[in-house]
Image (cartoon, rainbow, N blue to C red; front, side):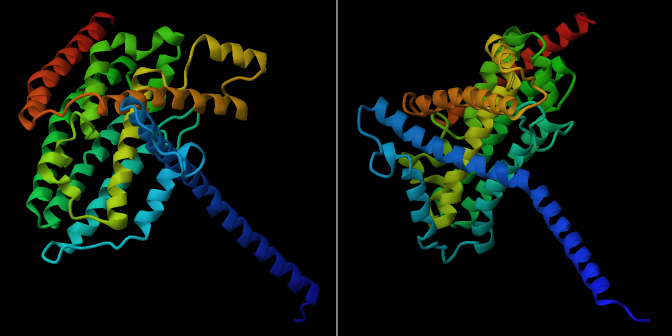
Length: 363
């Protein structure tokens, strides 16, 4: 059987085309993930710059100003410096726990971004248990801190890890009860459904007005989960040197640094999604949509507006968190636990009872 050379060339070109389609298909699958990671990275750099500028303004001093215009590249310069620093490992510590701890803290927080709806139909994965996926995965992060503290073979680090675990357990329960109240109002655990349920009545449909007690409890609990002042007991400099990150240097210390800001950003995003309607806004958005003859379902411009609205609400709470850090004094450990167990837990339970009763009477 004789095969013509043109037929062989056609077969080869066909297989090349099929292989190119497979490569493009694989790249297209990973494109949303890369986009999300790039957006998160830029957001973290922006938060670090904002915190330095806001803290400088509160303390009446000059913030970063030399690395780039207005010092915007200072965080990037610090991260590059940490990349090239030597990563030291304690000689008598547990090397495996010491190395795995920072990675667990970062990865567990990054996964939570997959269920955040940044706009209409603009979410990486719309899961039926999206909110509780965030709660369950975020509870893994303190395990990484505890592993880091134990693996460092340092009493200050170990105390910091224990404090992180105790603080996480104390404030996750009120946080979960507040989320459960929101789920009862919307009859769903999906973040997309929660945002859609708030969009029916515009500005007045936000859960902020229907759950004011839950909003305050959620805000305090999320600050405690992020280990921000006045709840930064696991890394209190005056008591524990630097807490669980005392023995860390180089890129591993940088991972802890990034994890704290990633956690702060995801908490602010969930405050926006659960209580402020996500990307929904009442009159201004409708006017913009009508003037440009677009709808929420179609158009790049509509998606861009949605993302901008979500981030604007998110950065409002970031501003409040940063301001609280440089304004409020640190609590003692007993005050921290008393606030969680004796005040926030009963209040969140009462809020859940009121929500359940109102839902039953409305049937």
